[in-house]
Image 1 (spheres, rainbow, N blue to C red):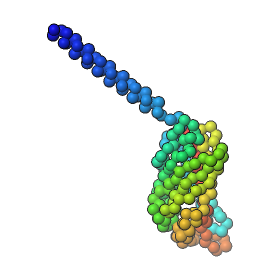
Image 2: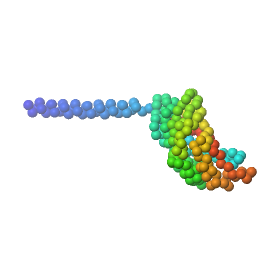
Image 3: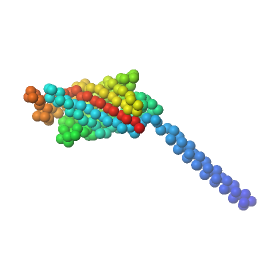
Image 4: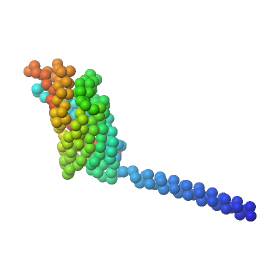
Length: 205
């Protein structure tokens, strides 16, 4: 009788161990299967911009070194990974290769705005070459149209925004005062343009 009980116990334990291993294997397989072919979080993205100064419209280039994907961004196709993705860009990650300029843009431009520690938005692709971003800055959300191209695993988008549409002329004026001498051209006029060109490139792995 004792032998039968021992055998029964061993049999039950074996079933339990086997069951646990099977469940663990299934969980691993499910996790692996859920990994999307295209992921914005894993992709290399460069968010570049070009601002302008003086009446001659001299370009000032820079980029943001950090981009957070807050929703979406994963799919089985590149377009689906982009379409509907929501993002957040900390303004503190701005880089223009000039520490003094970085500080001034943050202090005299972004900090003049309302609730603009980050630039946020949602991407929508409309057709094979055009889309819109529901872009939020200075507490205002506006649709920003853009053009895009796809080349293999690389997505590129370009647009020009006028920050006046986000009620940010006072921020432009503030920056112009802080950079008065540097933004003065040969004509003696100090000017900071409200137009900013934006170019984004994303290379998926």
